[in-house]
Length: 296
Length: 310
Image (cartoon, rainbow over all chains, first blue to last red; front, side, top):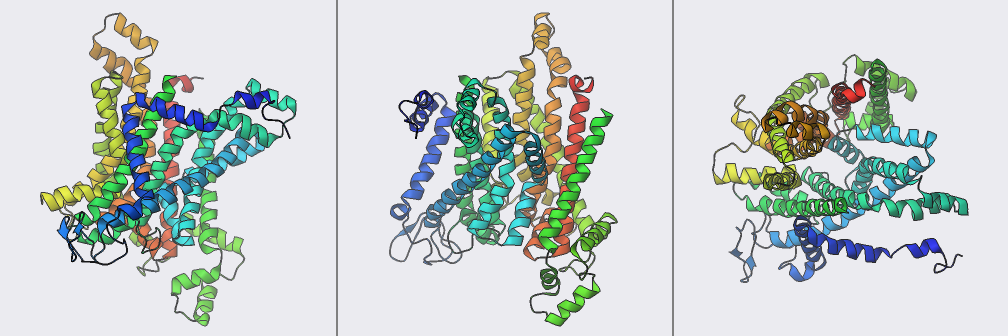
């Protein structure tokens, strides 16, 4: 066991939380990034505080087809109206936020874990490893994304786990390409050579020396990708390939209420605004982060 | 250059073959499930057995694969379980509908995104640049189904100007094309505009543009004659790759507006386990995607003299 305080390499590094906070403070310089961060934080808070914020049970059938602002049986107000079987739309959006904010980061994380491992291996080992992994990625990436999702989900069935599997399968190659490029650049640095000379195992070089130094572009990409994954989960829900009912999920809320859209547009309009604002927040945040990372 | 083109085509064919193999294994690995999908869940064991024997499913899997591939290459996609007619009969007309929709989208999206991208990239950091950049982030953040809902709420529910579905039930009607086209343009143009902007901004910082400006050429000439030509190389590739994006986008948009196109067909086939239709749609989608990628690569190399002559 190496004593961390005596290891000069370990001393060089600043704890991740400090760098994260520092970058967050840097974000003040980009108003676009600030707006993005504010929107994302807003939705995270909504998801955490859902039971306190939601005026009704998201699954309870109260009064069907109420317009926004209508007054319910016991005097409570349906701020955003109710859907065709009488569930409060505001409460469903608030709880649906939880679904999105659990599955989207989870799927992105899985895709990143696989993509990073593939990219590090391809970039560091090179040769046959690189050839095989790169060609496999090229083939998967040549699929139109949604065609791939539709076929996978329709074949293996719609469930939370399968959505994560499908997203990992389709996104990991893209992440792998980025990580591979970064690794090719980083593997010739002096500190990697130093670690090799010290006789450190390959996994340690990859995870401790190379990966932390590739984090900048990866954080920006992760932010953008989180937005895409949010859209994907919404689209799958909308196409009827998402999470099974009755748990509220923004995409399937739109799918369920779509045929009433010409008479009661509020039922699909508000979930649409919710998902668009979350994706917009993530994209603005990514843009802000990129702007800052280009500056220094 | 010839070697490059040959290599690129070789890789294209290899990709198609591997994709076909994966697709075949995914959908037809077990003959039993194929028979269940074709004959329905209430068919008897003997019926399935008879069907399997009649359709050559008793052979080893590699024989079945090569038979399937051969039939595919000769345009015989099998019979649709749902429509009870050969897959090809339905597929081509649906594909033509999607091509029409795609044509509309590209006819509007390309001039719009190139103009905005060039205007933004011409003076990087200007007010116009910031406005265009933020607008394109906002529009790409709207998922297609969300912008379809928003636009329907405005133009169909609010203003009553446009029809809400595009099923073309009373003959072909250009009004029914407007909303699907708008939704796809809205989702797509932001990305192309951003790429054009980046490419234009990069060209504007090069030495030859600085020289052209310093030697006193009118700004218009600098932009039109020197900057544009070089700035258009990258967007060309991006636009070609948008065809791949479009194949995804049409699934949502055609489903939403009940447009009888290829995307809706693929989705219906998947939801109904219409196995031969899924195979045909998937192969066509990958074929279109891979061919456009190959053309984009070759075109990029051809357009870029630094690569062409090296």
